[in-house]
Image 1: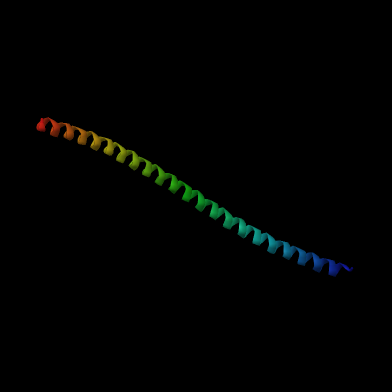
Image 2 (image 1 turned 120 degrees about the vertical axis):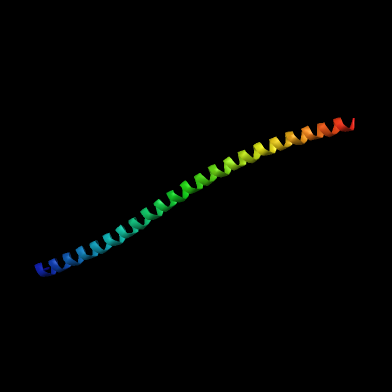
Length: 82
């Protein structure tokens, strides 16, 4: 194999490696962006979960309070009837 052929083959190999590197870099960039998006989604879901839990706690407190009021009214009605 002569030196010109070797040089030409080396150039082709370098071009091929450069192309492959570009593909891998693009894929990595895409995966990094996807990972960032998934982290954002996870954080949003955690905030939503916390807000829902706070709402559930608030509704539970209101339900307990309403139940106590119903019992008081029931007692009041029974005292009026007696």
